[in-house]
Image 1: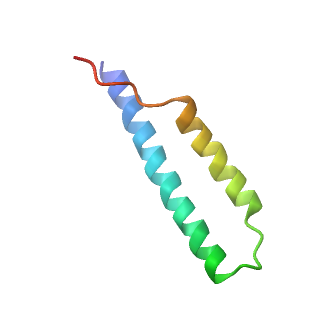
Image 2: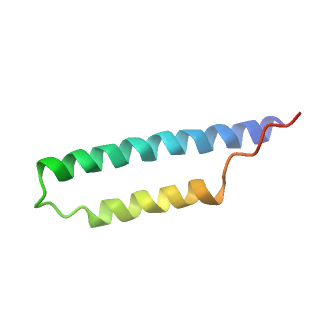
Length: 61
């Protein structure tokens, strides 16, 4: 089960990173609405898609 725990940890880290990136993007948008962030947002969406594609497995009993 160690490999599954490793994968679950990676999924959790990915979620933390994408949440932080989303927050940073929103702050930049608020401060600089003239900046085109569409490419950055698309990359973050791709990362979020990976999280959705490989969700953490439910705990094993």
